Image (cartoon, rainbow, N blue to C red; front, side, top):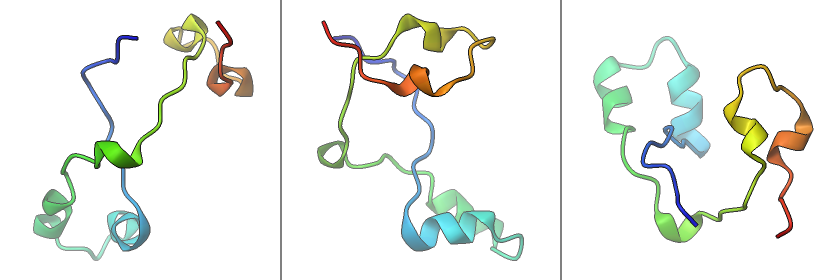
Length: 66
């Protein structure tokens, strides 16, 4: 299965709270822009419908059975 080469920032715990806090120092925000550990990720095959911006419903994240 091919995985897209771009990835959003994944924030957890205190980093997620700091990211949303307007008082957080911008330098601290930059330090949060690091790769998420691949061992903590899972992947699921989803419908190609996810690639169309006109689609916006919960079925987009349902696992497709092959």
